[in-house]
Length: 156
Image 1 (cartoon, rainbow, N blue to C red):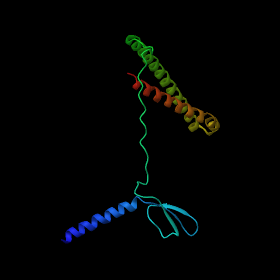
Image 2: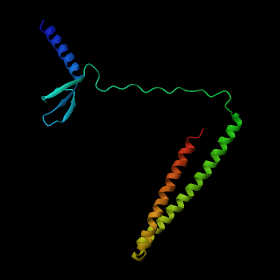
Image 3: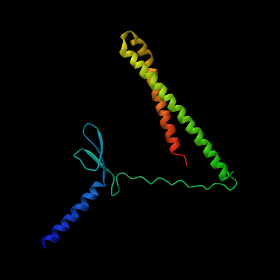
Image 4: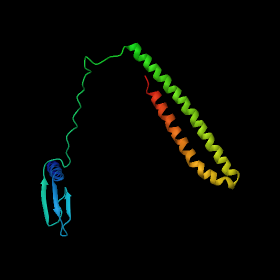
């Protein structure tokens, strides 16, 4: 018999605490600071804003309707599209090769400038003048190579 009473009390306390957690209070303390909470405090003015509703609610985003292609939309024949895709691949591969060469040249120029810096300190101002632009050039070419590599990987 004691076990049944214990389980009933436990179930009652859990349902009571769940109800309290869903109640939202607006409390104003003695200094006028407003506090929004799900626990009633000892502040002078506590009013119930909402009860028995989840505190944070939002509606699901609406799904965008998929529109079909209109029947009068111009279509390209499969062999023509494959030819265009092949041309695109060739152009991207050529751009990739050119950009890779530009990156190698930029790295070489930066390495030569850094080597001059280590040789004598008289050329240090030349290094300070040229190094930032060379480092920027290397960074730009690295980004371009990565973008072209990504574009080539996305081709069909």
